[in-house]
Amino acid sequence: MSPRDAAPPAPPTPSRPSRRRLVAGAVAAVLCAALAVLAVLAGRGDDDGSAAAATGTPTASVPTEVVRPTAPVPPPPPTPEPTGPTEDAAALPPSLAPVAFTEEAAVGNGVTATVEDLEAVQGSAQGPGQVAGPAVRVTVRIVNGTDTPLSLDAVAVDVTSGPDATPASPLEDPSAAPFTGTAGPGESAVGVYVFTVPEDRRDALTVAVGYQAGAPYLVFTGPAD
Image (cartoon, rainbow, N blue to C red; front, side, top):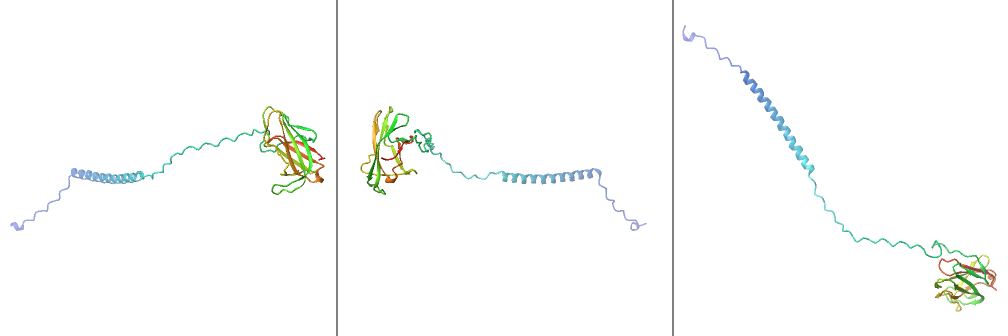
C-alpha cells in the first residue's frame, strides 16, 4: 500500500474542561455578582446621604429686630376712698327731719343752723336769664360748735315752694350775701340768699341748708309771713 492509499489521521478530540476550572469560574461569577450588588447599595447610600444632607442643612435665619426695653410706666395712683360725711360720694346727701322756721336744726356733730329772717321782697335780676319780680330773702345763721375751724365756702342753700315743692330760682340781688370764709370753733356766720317765689306759693316754703359737701341737709319748713 502506498502512502496515498493510507487513511487520513482522525481529528483531535476536544479536551473536556477540568473540574477545577469549573469551580473557579463559578466562584468568579459569584464574586462579580456580589461586587455588583455592593456597588448598587453604595450608590443608594450616597444618594440618601446627599438627600439627608440637603434636607438637614439649616436655612439662613432672618435676623429679628431687637426691641430695646423702655422705661417702665408707673401704675396710676390708687383712687382715694371718699372721706366726706356720706359713705357713697356719688349718692345725694340725706336730709334731716324738717323743723319750723322758728326752731334750731342740728347736724349732731356740733354744727347747728337757724333761719334768722324770712322776708318778702321785690327781687332784682342781675345775672343772665334771671327775671326780676316777687321774691323771698332768706337769712341763715350757722354756728360752729366743733373744736375745729369750719369752712363755709361750700355752703348750699336751696328753697322750694308750694305743695309740689317746686324749686325756686336764685337771684343775684344786691342784698344777697352768700356764706364765705371760715367759722372758728364756737363762732357763727350769716348768709343771705334771695329766691324768686310768687306770692301765691309762699304758704308752703322749704329751706334746705347744707353746711358742707356731702353733709346732711338741715331742713326748715312753714309759711312765709
